[in-house]
Amino acid sequence: MIILKAIGNFFVKVWRWIKETAWIQPLLIVGGIFAIIFSIPYITDWVGSWGYGSTGAYFNSKLKSLEGEKEEAVKGKDGDYVTEADKIVYDIYENTKLAYDGNYDQINSEYGEKFFLVFTSDDCDGCSKAEEGFKALFDTDNWGKLLIAEDYESFKDPTNLIYTINASEASTNDEDYKDTQNSKAFYRFLERNLSFFNMTGYYLENSAPYKINRSVGETNYNHYSTPDFEDFVTPTILLVDYTEAAKAQNRAGVSEVIFGVTELDKARLLLQMWDHTTSRTDNPFSANYVA
Image (cartoon, rainbow, N blue to C red; front, side, top):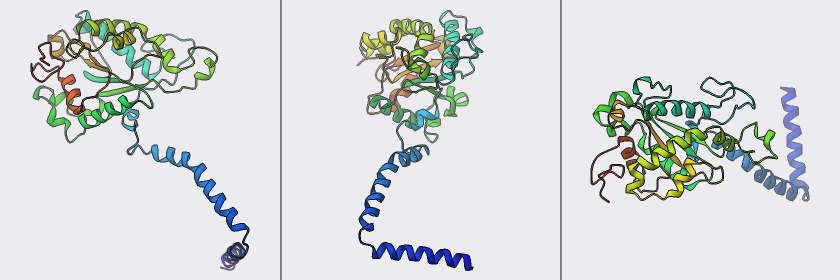
């Protein structure tokens, strides 16, 4: 008790000195203001780390990272240099190649039977719109009600129906390439996975009804098929589908692509993409769509 009383008396004396010393008060006020200003970035990062209401938080929770590459190693599903982003794209590439060739019985994906892969980036207005659409689509109170009966048992849990790759993500390897053109992790990722974009880009440009019916310009497809870091379009949203229904329609593997979600009813557009719906009046992905 004596110690606590002594400590209390000390602070009382300090407070009394501050009140009675006129010149110290403006300094403390100014110092307090600067302390608040300099703390704002740290407070923002701290609050953002909670994931509440921050743009990109939902997409970040589904992220397949570009971190973890090694300069020299064997590429492939079990290669010791590939990142999470490389692994999922390699898996999709191998299984989509089988699907495009009609070898359906050999398809074996570790990421699911049907899902979205979204290429996003920071400070991207279109990415924010797409994120809003996915959050609404996959809201657990809504998703089960939106599914057609045939999909209900397989996909009623939306937890693993979307994965993302962030083109703006930095990696610890970037420092090793700081004086070269491939100093960005996503640039190196694109270089490693050109075969994936070449193959799926050719298919999507020549087969996807969305391109035909919505008159999507050639430019977006060119930037996808022969990707360049500076011109790669975000968001790019792929639908990967290995279901029996997709196989029956010869639309298995990477089967749909859209570049942005600008419609007012974003979730409805994504649901149409998911369903490969056939309604003439309703569905921009159907070959029979009437605008």
